[in-house]
Structure formats: structure tokens, C-alpha cells
Image (cartoon, rainbow, N blue to C red; front, side):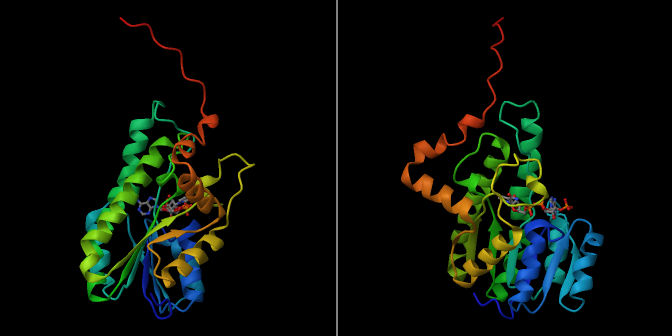
Length: 255
Ligand SMILES: NC(=O)c1ccc[n+]([C@@H]2O[C@H](COP(=O)([O-])OP(=O)(O)OC[C@H]3O[C@@H](n4cnc5c(N)ncnc54)[C@H](OP(=O)(O)O)[C@@H]3O)[C@@H](O)[C@H]2O)c1
């Protein structure tokens, strides 16, 4: 797709990768950007930097009525970037919090994208638009140390393929963006020896991939390494992070 002159709408644009995408798209010639946040006050620095080109919108992606309201207002959008996301790092499927964590992650990382897709598909159809869903390497290689998050991103990858299928007749580009570890608030508690990419590098790679009409965009050395590992030996890749797992709790006696 052509980035120059495009009109993106980005969810979770107030920090991290979303904020970096706003800067990158404007630098590359986007006409304007709808920057969305649960709390629009957090977008003040962006609107002050680009008073005529950043339009702030209040949007909690888990609320379908807010997604619909955004679609009624932003009828000129031709690029929907589903970036908003939450994670619970360091939690295995056996953790006491696993069920509550997974519900929260599914609500934002899966149902949030579905809400936005359903609200915006008509606008995007009118504007020959594209969609980019910001996923993660854990969508293609489960990481048991963020077990519930991995499940949510794998579900979102499957949903991305479904979106592509249902919109194929319209030739809508639906990109699955696979991201490795990035230096944002989401990863602040991860071990300090982990190599993190910058949000700026990832944002630039996403825009490059969209410009090349790529359906699968691997943004950084981490995601490229995961893709290669899974391609080389999927069973070995499945066990790649097992060494991080805590010891299993002792078995309880059977009653
Ligand atoms: N950082 C990484 O290593 C990494 C790796 C792979 C994939 N990703 C993905 O990249 C995307 C961006 O993450 P990030 O690293 O930039 O994390 P971040 O700095 O934690 O930003 C997350 C953004 O999502 C927003 N958000 C959360 N729940 C929301 C909701 N219900 N409605 C609307 N917005 C909501 C947050 O808004 P508030 O300020 O209101 O909380 C924030 O703007 C996510 O989808 C994440 O899963 C990140």
C-alpha cells in the first residue's frame, strides 16, 4: 500500500510501539493519524507535536460501542493498526492467576481486534484500506513463561487469517505483524540480559512491510529468529523456552 498520503488509525497510540508508529507514519508522509487511547489526555504530547496531523480519539478496544463511534467519526481511514495489547509475563498455565489473566488478554488481544475489525471493515472497504494486527513471536512459538499471553496471540493470528479470508474478494491487505522483544513498558520486568529491539525499529519495519504489501511482517531480529527456528524444526522450537520453567509443585495426594 502507499504510505504517503495514507490515513491510519492506531489503537493504544499513547506509548510504546503505538506511539512510535504515529511518529513513523507521519515521517513517511501519512496525511494525518487518528491516535487512539483509553485516556486521550495521554496523547497530549503527540497532538502538541503535530497539531494539524494527529487526531486524538478515546477508545477502549474492549468496548464495541467505542469502536463503532470511532468508525463513525474516522470515515476516511485506510489503514487500521490493531496495536493495543496486554500481557502477563512470567505466568505459566499452572499459575493461580492463569484463568483471570487469560480472560483479560483474550478480551483485549483477541476480542479487541475483533471489535475493531467489525466496526471498521465497511470504512476500509470504501477506502481500499488495509489492516495490520500487531501480534508476537509467541503466536508462532508458544512461550510457557507467558503461557496465557501466547494463547491469546496465537488466537489473534488465526483470527488474522480469518479476516484475510472473509475480505479476500475486496483485496484488502490484512497483515500479521510478528514482533520479538521490544523495549516498552510491557517488557520492563523481563530479565535484563534479554536483547530488546527499539519501538522505532519495529515501527519502521511495520511500515516497510505494509509498503511492500506483505501479509506476514517479521519486524526485528527476535521475530526473524523465531520464524527461522520454527521453520527448521517445529518440535525443537516448541521446547525452546522450557529451560525457563519453574519446578513443578509436588503432586497432591489423591483422595
Ligand atoms: N513489547 C514487546 O516486547 C512486544 C512483543 C510482541 C508484541 N507486542 C505487542 O505490541 C503491541 C504494543 O505493545 P507495547 O510493547 O507498545 O506495550 P505497551 O507500552 O504496554 O502499550 C500497550 C498499549 O495498549 C494499550 N491498551 C491496553 N489495553 C487497552 C484497551 N483495552 N483499549 C485500548 N488500548 C489498550 C495501552 O494503553 P494504556 O496506557 O491505557 O494502558 C498502551 O497504549 C501489543 O499488542 C503487544 O502485545 C509487544
